[in-house]
Image 1 (cartoon, rainbow, N blue to C red):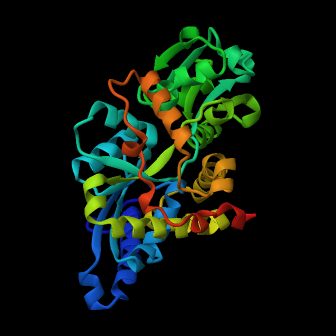
Image 2: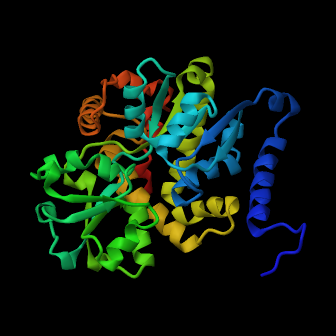
Image 3: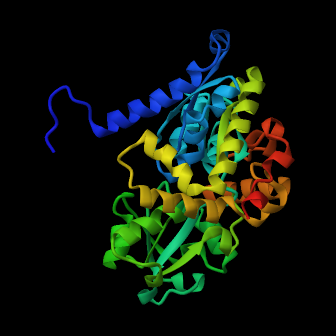
Length: 355
């Protein structure tokens, strides 16, 4: 379709609509309240896809505004970028892999403080995807095989943890570090025996390329003895100390939206569509549901509520990441996660309400 000079693209129209809806929520507040709004720049880890739904819902439905917050949500380009941007002060808060945060803190022991404040993915989404026709049905079958992944991929970086948990030598496989856009294509073509990637991303990418779950042996890291946490809401330590009510309010608003997302993912995806009208709604709904089912709705989250950490598990995870990543120092659990800003546990018992 030819676009006339000066006309708006579908994506810009979608962004305008989303901004208008968010602005409407703010405009309904009294003028005095608007002047007292605390601005928060929030960095996602990736594009506006299904798993971003609760953040975008909280913004569009005015939940952040009700907490006195003016939240700007930007797409990202990976967890390391989100961690660095929050640490640098470019963003007050963000969303990223807790293991990337552990790495940053270990490499910057005297650097700017940044902490996890709400665990969203109770387990790492990292998984191994293998071709069944390669004779791979269990971790032991990976020995001598070729696995592809980007150098920054969590599955690749944490391979030593997966290998140790499943009786494999770390060097039992041959790795190919590849561009993320090529990873699933290489597996589909049979150029490699397996790949690692986020479960709810690589599975959909493989299906787009003609492979089905029946063609694959899928080994999610949490199901194979890897106790790492996944993505968390992150906050600048300086911002949190100066604005504790703002961080608490952000988490209350997000927690509220997450509960609604868990209860009705199909409705929640509309907030992603409102932000980016070019998304494939069916695919992003499935991506959201896969994320919720695999790393949000876990036994621990059901028993203890979403958002928090188990102290012993966090200590174990920090040590495992330090060993696997060969980190120079070991951050303390208090450096990595601060539970003071979480909503009360009874408000975080969201999963029992979705049954």
